[in-house]
Length: 429
Image (cartoon, rainbow, N blue to C red; front, side, top):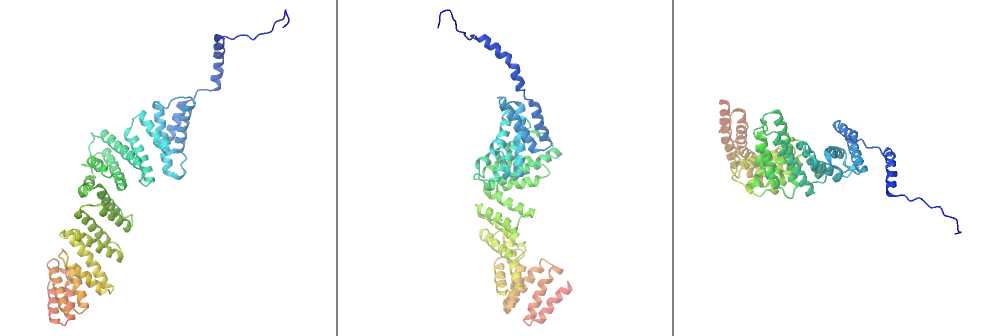
């Protein structure tokens, strides 16, 4: 550098000058990123939810959470709890409509959102626990009841909802409208417990919960139903699975919506699960009774099969004796009318091999089948026995078939005088 010249230098900016410069820029930056109106976003979610516009509610909830994230704000506070529950519930309703087109993550955006809400705010516990429990239950059902974790959560939250509402209504009379509405929910809760118990690896956990639920229903207009459900979970020495399956079969039978084969399959599962031989015999008796009332020859044969199984397990039970004998009578009568005389004779012999209330019809069948094969002595003996048994119980039109059968067999074998005598008894009565 030549002597007498100087080089230009940049000014040095100190910390204070820099701070003042940045402060001057802040208003401009604030204008570029205006504050988010969270109240408007929250209200949009609430309005859509109240209108049951689930898609709009879900999208509004997502917008609220996205705004929190954009501002770097935590997922906390009453407003977040409200909107998170709205979003989770709305997405649950959308999922129910069509699970295959669901665009969100069920665990995170349905279950997770509602759980996050409940960690912050436990207002309206009955409603919120019920919705969350239902979300777990429906997902469990969709997964064919194979996920134990889902079952545990569904069972727990539905139970918490039940207890929360029971506490709210503890001072209400059990015949009030409000308590009656709650009792209907209790029945729904028990129905869900039964569905879970049918498929559960640990069905015994439902013994206490179902019985606790039944106690909440005692004294209501559905008292008889609760008493029945209370007993059935204790069936077979507390074998919850067997009791639940049996009750499910009975309910399917009474509802009349399931096919006969579906009902019998549930009964079969119940019998298979039952440990006590007398308890299993009672289920087979029920199966025999149900099958005998179905149309079609195949069901009459099934009725005999189930009746025989029940009889082998508990031969001294009069109800089982009567059911088995009646099933044999029905099939013998049907065989005879179809011209299957040997099968009719075989069934009638089995039906008269033990005593049962109503066995006069079996002796009627037997005498008719024996007469068809020309067995004079036995046909007359059994026709007379059927008539004697019947006239101790019946009169008039109810007795007439037994009398006529005896008269027909007497005449068939040339005993016309005796036949006229028996006919005269009918004319004098």
